[in-house]
Length: 185
Image (tube, rainbow, N blue to C red; front, side, top):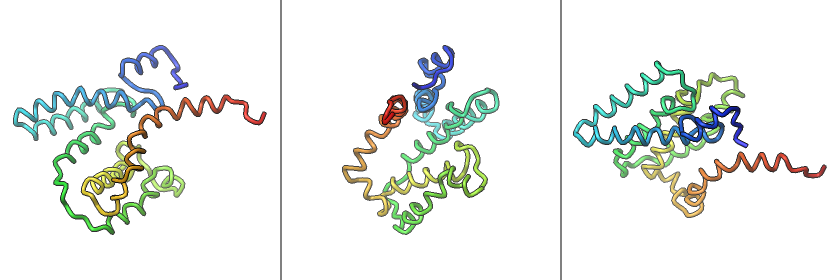
């Protein structure tokens, strides 16, 4: 169902070296958690800037020195750094509601496929400033409690957030099973 083409690919998935198809993010997350332990130790030792510089140096070295796919930690490490740095942002910053409204209205242009259909230049997702920057901006606005995003605190969006990753992982096998059903034939 997940399209493993070889034993090597299957083993890479099982040992969390590299994921295939919708499973790509799981090894990336696990690898970051392992790296995070070391960063946490450096940070807790009183060297927060060294932890950040070290992390970015590791990312740069891995991108230059290894032949990795875009579905590996070096390509996504900056998102983990930004997520960690967001915990240092003061949560009581007041942002005018209109900024949230403009951000929501810009959503279609943040989607790479929409920009491709408009014949705009689109870089690979992991470093395209719009594709990568939009979710970061959205994350920070939600974190700051911008009035436009208060609806996310209600039970339905919170529930959908809880089940979203599981639904993401299961959608591919469901599509495969439904595709094999002989409906109307």
